Length: 66
Image (tube, rainbow, N blue to C red):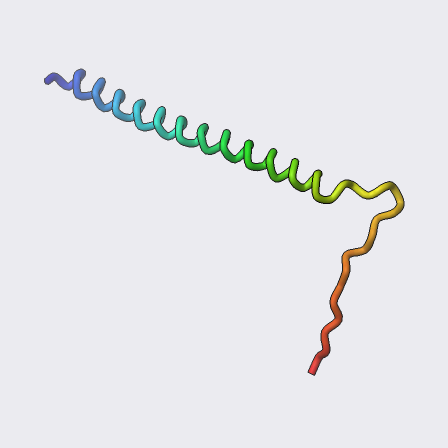
């Protein structure tokens, strides 16, 4: 093989690795978006947004010190 063929082969390998990486990241992104949408839907079903002006302060538990 000539130097040009080795160079072309090296570029092809690098291109294939980058393409595979982008494919994997894209698939993970799609899965993550699906999970976020599902969690948001479950949160909306579980605890509907309070009406304006009726927000509650978070409940706190008192603990003894010492």
